[in-house]
Length: 343
Image 1 (cartoon, rainbow, N blue to C red):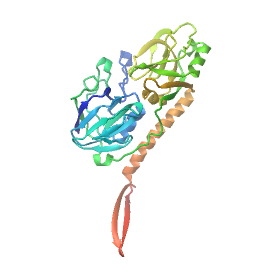
Image 2 (image 1 turned 120 degrees about the vertical axis):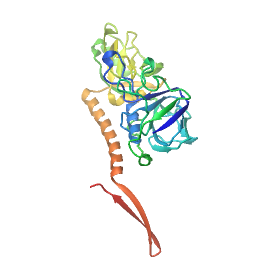
Image 3 (image 1 turned 90 degrees about the vertical axis):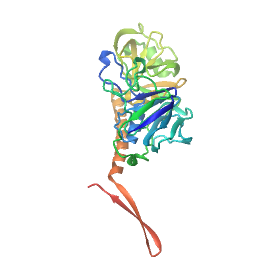
Image 4 (image 1 turned 90 degrees about the horizontal axis):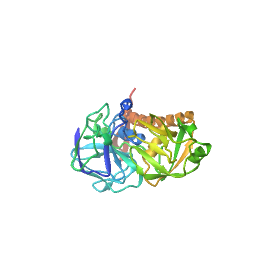
């Protein structure tokens, strides 16, 4: 266990985990991280359960002083992290000592980064989750974004800190560029759009506007035409649902989305591509590609296989421990490596 102190809040730094599941029927949004892949990888690097809480930093990262030694990992968008001025690599677990300070110089790629701590962040679970729903002041750290002076308590690491240092994952499954292709499946109201409207949606490029946050992304571009209008009787909204109101501009619903909505949904971003959308920022360009349900499931399985591969790597490293012995013979230095193998 240990503590960290926030000396600079950043633009929007929130405690988030995998979300508040099971309460949408009561009007409570799921919330949780915007980029679930980076969140899971960050936790794997520091030996946590994949669903454990992390800090999600948007565009401008926070300043964090470590009051105790711990192990951290940073994944997702590159906001140029550094500790005491020295650059910190993404996708790698590192030991930080008491008194050291983590800061961020500015955005290079993506939009959000994830900072995981060995043991997670010790805030109360509200409705089974540590996630912050900022609009409703629910969960996380006092239901709000972090401020300068906040002190957060870290949980008990699941493994010795010395065994966690130096873990590395090459995040080669996702790259964060300013042009994003999102694969989608047909939405529940696709028939509400004219053939011309559907062709427009899949043929033209859309831009992320300044009206984008954890609730949803409003896009601008060519008008998507309906047959008779964009209103429906309200129904449930999944993360990645693409609503098109009467004005014809798409809105992609994200982690803090409302639980129901009354606009037609032309498509839904597949689960495996939601992390790409979570890394989009104003000005980025979006195109849509339609895939079948079966393709979406295959792509999702590929993502899960990749994460399982990461975990297996570290499990094998724990099973096979190496030790180097050196000795001299006939004036020459020899090395002998012994591997401890679990039977």
